[in-house]
Image 1: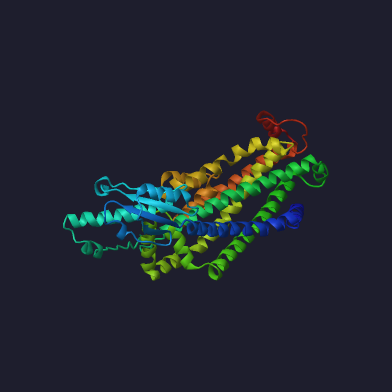
Image 2: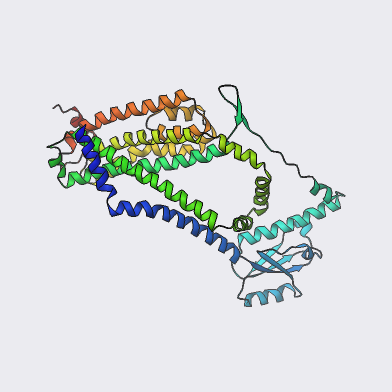
Length: 441
């Protein structure tokens, strides 16, 4: 045990002291923050730059006066005919357009938007939405329907979702929170297991190619060396992972509170296609019972999710690191190791893909349940299910199977490892690996 602890200490300290570790620990949160800020700024700027001056040629007669200018579109009734306005448009350098409204727009429900360049989809949506509203009002009026009565009828139904617990008590249902948290956990676990499991494989290949391993195994057993590397690199990954969460969360919260103007957020959302629908949703959220929303968040058991997240993350990492370690001991370079990477990560990739649809849509269904019991898929499947509420016996059973499978894979990997780490220049095949496993001594 003492030798394993020494190897863990060596693996951990040798990596966390590297400049690359320190740089990546701080660079990744800054990168995501800069990416988010850049996307927000460019999106906001693009919608501001999308402002267009529209010259309206209204052959129908009473449409032009009902079009309303906004931050994206300025309407001007043209005194020229269509051809003259086109000639003037071709000479303009700014963003200008011509809206030609034909006489039969009520029956044909079609208008023309002529621009000096490519037509903005946002502008098309805004103009078509206003024209549709004008036509709708005229249709109501022609059929004797009072528009004011229709506009005064604005039903608003709030669904207060409840769920019955095992004790028979009702509590708020947190479906939206569970879905968001489930997807976030699936992404984090998939990336983390793949990233840090592959680091174990690369570490073994590096030591093997440098012939360092021949010196190391003269003092420790291959099993001890493998366990030390798996746990040591796992602690490095967990340290970096926690730092990423803290730094990224801190940056986003600070920036949102100090620098982001809520009005800017609304303007960006309102400028997008389907702005009318987005506005309706925003108003509904704003008018919703804030106490109910706060109650739903407070009633969500984040402590349980966080505890099981780390348990499944660590157990899943140990399992996949053992597999990656066995693959690393069977090859001489990373090029050869790539042939093992895809088969190893296929169960994770499959579960990761299914988590966005099958598991979230039916977290207690047969597919989601079986995936959460299979050790090679449970690190993602179970974590996606837990926010929706999973019986404790299922969680503990899944975790137990995961740990037992890790121990089994570690034993198998150690038998391959003890021979593979000393094999050089020989391409490993499945038949050869089985021979290594069966070697005695």
